[in-house]
Image 1 (cartoon, rainbow, N blue to C red):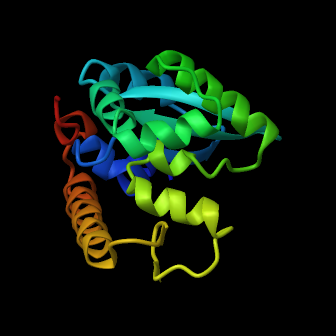
Image 2 (image 1 turned 90 degrees about the horizontal axis):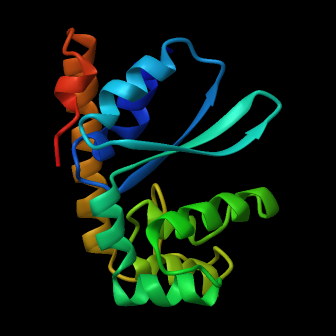
Image 3 (image 1 turned 90 degrees about the vertical axis):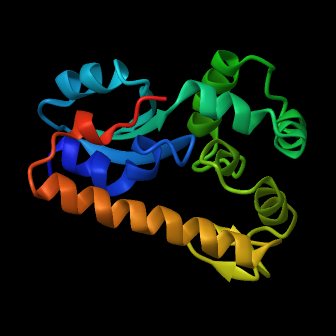
Length: 176
């Protein structure tokens, strides 16, 4: 799978501006830089988080949407608990450092657009006793989580269908 197909498969809700960020794991992909440059012109940013044995974890995000997401009062409180600084750039750098010291910091869900109540529930319950489990573990509003998951899944299906039919990835990347 090339870089563009990987993005469409795993980050289409972020490409569509439905989600503030996505995480993808990648290994030695060709044409990554050229694609990143084209998508950055459309408001998508890329942050390498960790690199281990040639395997890299990459955060794909939309700055404005991520700032709004992180400004949610409960999201801010969770990040404050983990001693995150205030500015987005500092928070992203802090997240990168958290990935170096913690295999998968629980608060990453905030960055990925998961409901803050669910991230809080996951942390408080050590990942146990969830009401529902999909892309994330749901602890609060199962009905809302299912709607979000359905919307993201529909986006993935549609984007993958368009991409495999020849639509260029830059056309799939909504300009914010």
